[in-house]
Length: 313
Image 1 (cartoon, rainbow, N blue to C red):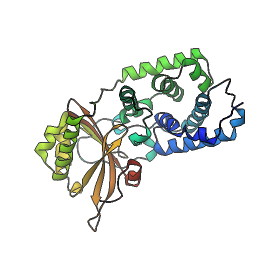
Image 2 (image 1 turned 180 degrees about the vertical axis):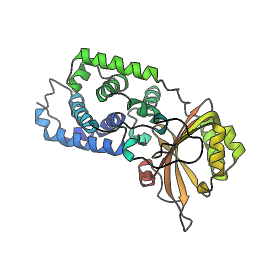
Image 3 (image 1 turned 90 degrees about the vertical axis):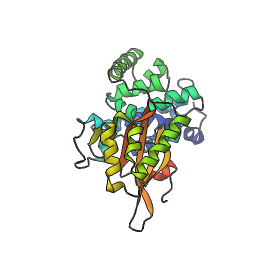
Image 4 (image 1 turned 120 degrees about the horizontal axis):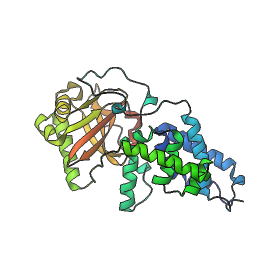
């Protein structure tokens, strides 16, 4: 029988967060799933047999069942680019329910290692676009892929966690890999001094509405989107013109943070008294030395503290 207690379970909270987020694609649902996992595991600790399964395997089995239950009947979370073609103009339409979108998460909650090589692998596996891609998989394929290819559980451990056989695990993994291979994402640039300078230039161009500078920063095929709206726009020139000509962004400021392991920003907007208040979280991806993707999560001002951003400027 087990000799562990609540302290050992609490130590698994962050690993469980990294696991459940990839499966669920929602920050709030992830927190609920992890909390419920800790509660159930603590209530059933007397059932855990160390000779039959490691604590992490046993707890991940509980988390997996909770996540799959939460996904039953739920809409597939996505990004605007997954829902339809690019827009022809600035009319963004009407917002869709929060349950339709993949949520951003602080990078600090999604990394479990200090090794640079491992961190690169982890960063790729929590990119907002990759998490959205995972949501295309059926829940059990999603679970198997994350357990095997991201968290490096063995096929036998994965079979124990999913209450299936090794053959079933391998079959699900093969199908999941095939789906990802058919929708492969382009890799992003590593974060270094040149990218830091590029992002500084982006902040300056955004805050000063400098069209020429923005055109130099964005890739010609850049994409921008703004959940909870299905609207999205392709083309660096179109994006630069929209951003630098919008009166809505006049006086806005950007403060850097880490979103899903990628460079991001907190966007602040002045209120009626001129105080800059949290407005939206932004995540960017860079490729080839220029910005390729910008996702602005509108309505996320209440989450700034999670990203170590101040509540006013």
